[in-house]
Image (cartoon, rainbow, N blue to C red; front, side, top):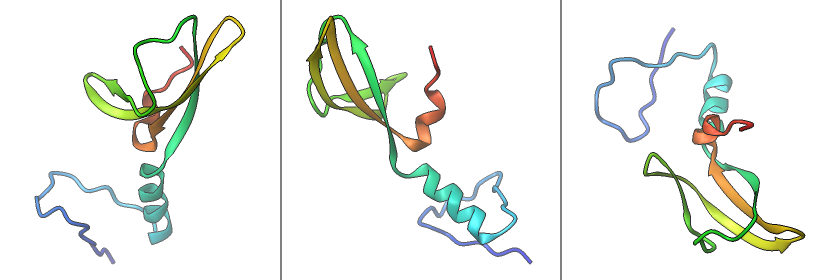
Length: 91
């Protein structure tokens, strides 16, 4: 059988993602919440401060958590929301 649970959106979607069981659906929802931490190196501090937003195509996807001086530059700690983690690549 199929059941639907609405979590606030009253709009009708063209597609709905189905999961094999409730546990997998809950896991997918959980993976969309939370954040990942990235450590970035720069030769000098760009014009940022703690809490500055990280933007992708001018949309906020995370923020600057912290930064500090290291040998040869600045280490920047950033957080990115899990739902946007797929945007992070090794490059």
